[in-house]
Amino acid sequence: MAWWNEREGLVFGDPVEECLTLLITRDGGQTWTPTPCNIAPIAQTGEAGFAASNGNICVQGDTAWVFSGGTASRCLRSTDRGLSWDVFELPIRQGEAMTGVFGASFANARRGLAIGGNWEHPDDNFGNLIATRDGGETWRLLAEGTGPGYRSCIVHHPRNSQQVVASGFQGVDVSLDGGRTWRHVSDSSRYVARFSPSGRTLWLAGKRSLSRVSWDAISLP
Image 1: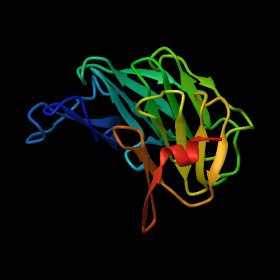
Image 2: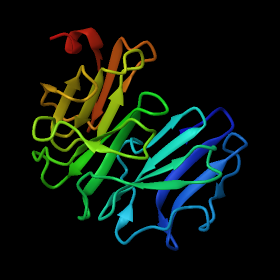
Image 3: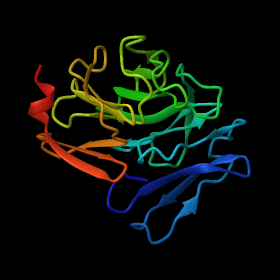
Image 4: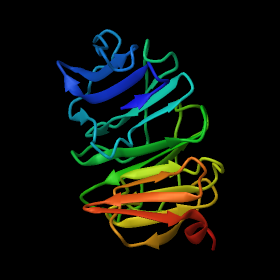
């Protein structure tokens, strides 16, 4: 789930009757309307959405991005608060049930990152991190063979878009240059990471765990 404002929100779910599920509210969540199949993208075979701590849906201004995964992994984008949708292909690893995008983050309406890979081979760090500079229309592979392996979450620092955190059951990694290079900072299993609005605090959550750390403590070399 994500919100454009206090009244307009979006829910993404697995396919129902061939089209991907996109529910829209315009009244603060009191009622929700399914996007009809002539507007919502038709799902490809084996394409769905991962329940990755709400990480595969992003909002910036009027724009929303949704990322599917599985045997097909694509980027869905609406620039008009859910009235229409475009679909863009991704170079991320896909083709198996547990592959594709698990988490994404946008620093602004044009620059974004998406991460995932192969859940069944979490050490593999090829084809699992991608970046866009045109709002999701085109993507390129990033940090091939040098970045983190499978991760379920990625998030930009709210005050410095060059600072990025990726987390998953294999631990936590930090990039200070927009995702080009990475440093592994923790082996602890953390499914989701979120910054406080000021960016001074990083919250990390895993199975039966919730921790709060100073961003300065882990971002400084």
